[in-house]
Amino acid sequence: MIQIRPKRTDRAPLYTAEQRVRRDQTIWTPVQGLLAPLQFLAFAVSLVLVLRYLVTGTGYEAATLSVVVKTGFLYIIMVTGAIWEKVVFGQYLLAPAFFWEDVFSFAVIALHTAYLVTLFTGALAPAALMGLALAAYATYVINAAQFIWKLRMARLDMAARDRAEQGLPA
Image 1: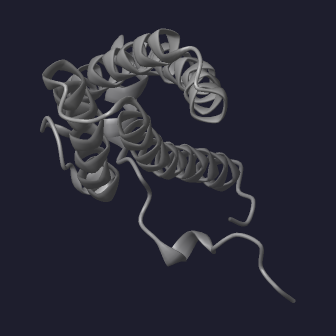
Image 2: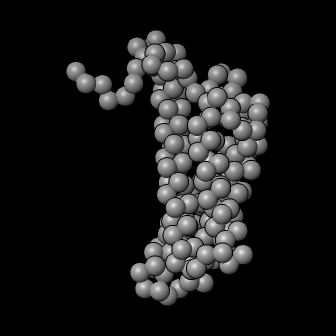
């Protein structure tokens, strides 16, 4: 029989009991839960505007503003996420449970920041600038998928813990 999800013994739980309590008690957990979908909404709107500009050549200002707004959300979620990590794991970034997500976040931030720098210095033509925005967005999508996967793993951990507490097989 093929298993769809890994066995509980294939990996350590994402959170210790103490970390789970801190995660559940900190205000930064619902803050992250609010900011993540808002950032995704800003991304989706911006992606449409950027693609519209690249296809039609119109709407450059709207596309540009949308990328700046999306980048602002990224910075806010990164700062609040670092605070969340400090509260839950005791360090601002690169906690073992989120190490690779944080490492990839640096690439996401670097590309978004490169967009802002090139926008404000005029170093790239508009089409190239929008291409850079698309590269930044591609990394964002990968990074968002990493975090969604971790959320899924945390939910599986919780379900396994609940089953164990009820005396059911994991």
